[in-house]
Length: 289
View 1 (cartoon, rainbow, N blue to C red):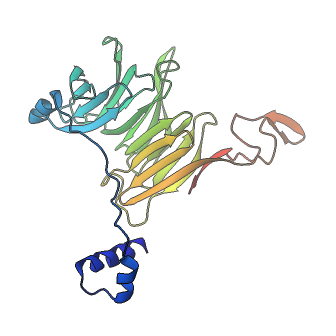
View 2 (cartoon, rainbow, N blue to C red):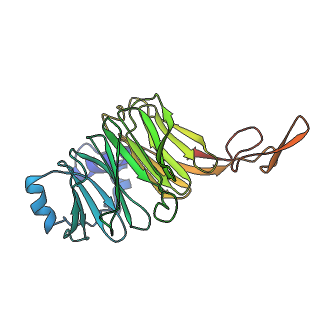
View 3 (cartoon, rainbow, N blue to C red):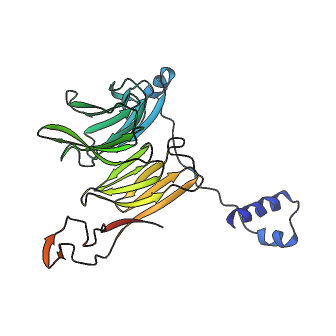
């Protein structure tokens, strides 16, 4: 209805094909301008960099930017585009970059099948993980610098991997597989969201279970043909952009049918994992609004 009204307004402005009723409604009304974004082009070091390389992805922190290139280079920039430092962790295209919440660690993944996590303040503190096929997306745990060294990654293998580091070294766990390449991953608090050919799924790290599924929009291209975008607007709001569709998901809490602390099975009280109800349904879920 809104677009039809705009078309009527355009015809009225031309002075042709508009009836007297349309002219009467249009008198005294002014067309509203669509909101415009204020922006400036990154210059300085970026201008020189793109003469010999290609910009492929960008991560934004409150204090700096990190640019990934087609040659496997990571460049830390200030907000004017001046180079602060650079790393060369990959031999192929950089597909995704993630900076932890504290701005101390940088994670990246590449077409060369590697995920690299490194400290921004100690060049010697870096680890490389090989996955033998292109890795398309990765995300560091939000509290990576202050807690366990955990990250999630996925790619053309079709597996969503959770990498944790313990006393015996790093260990990979498959959280999900079998629905095509994992193309996008975003982590906020205890909720981990990822996108593959089927749609978007959300995993609760506290309850250690998947809590929601958001289907891929009808007639939209596959995730590897047109990359979906995931953004946690807040701890309780997930934005999903896929082709020409935007979905807004809100985290809801499901009323527990029994006490979340314990459930009775055969007359015996047993403790339940945090975040799980007596019917094994997750307490939290995503509702599309």
